[in-house]
Length: 447
Image 1 (cartoon, helix red, strand yellow):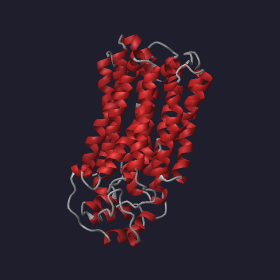
Image 2 (cartoon, one colour):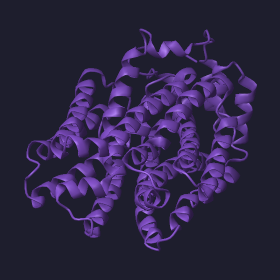
Image 3 (cartoon, rainbow, N blue to C red):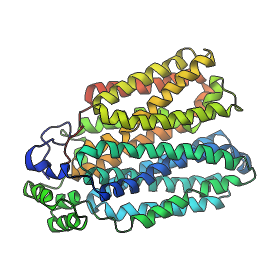
Image 4 (cartoon, rainbow, N blue to C red):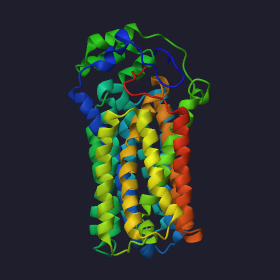
């Protein structure tokens, strides 16, 4: 594929080279996006159900705070492994084969959760589920970015995060109902995630390979056949082929080289600065609310926060469409810092003040994380895209896993105020990296 013209983002070339990026939206574009929804829904659902089920599981299987932290972080650790390893592999052997296999792993491990008898078994199964979800995080956004026209790319990629929130909110309402039944109802709750996973496996059969990846490998006839099979704009694709310039095979280490290190550094810090507070807080939301002065019996507050999560996610779609990538990133960090800092500085403030600020934080965070699916695929060229997306997703889950594991321990040992201060400083780090390095990639072409 053509080399990038800048060190900050894939090239925004003109003329016929952009024709393939400007074809009309068709049914296949919507299908590939819809099939990618499932990983995000599953991730939100998996995180949601474990946070609700953990107290009941801990009581029945007999384990304490350390195991709670490990089980809360287990899927995140798996996402790290799956994203990095499969992201690298997809740039080497292609996206299509791995795109179906990953959900077989999720379906099998989810069903097996019904039979666990120890926290060790549950940890292993949730690690495997995380590996499958992480693989799809590397593959799904990459395929969407490489298939869909640039005019619709931001909106369709952002919609993936909306499904994460839908999964999380669905887990909250369904999970609270199921665990209220008592007994071993948590087994049914955990195993329920195998149902959508099986559906995904069946629906993904027959999904073709990315024409852009095939072209990057010099397999022009196969790429042309895929475009023809999908009834795509063959003339636009021929323009892309004519502008194709054979280039040396890139190496994984180039993500850290002179040309792409800023994009890699920005993507890593920006992504972690968002998801570390997000996963830590919302995995242990009841505990955080209790420290804020909202009683355990106050389910209305939980429900309101989940509605703000959903509203923020939908509002984020509009913001992604209307604002620049760089502008939305910077201003969302500003609002997040402003709404969280008072919780760290004045932890004894009236709940009537802290809780509305937490609602603002919740809405803004939910809107901002739409960028987590939009920005990474736009930061790297085709022959490094899956590796780059997988790396950023994987490293973000390292931070998320550490934050999730440490949050209950930190609240117990150093208290609510210092814990919130640490999370606020994470957001400040994200703001600094965005001001220094965030490129503008909106409407850029996929090279």
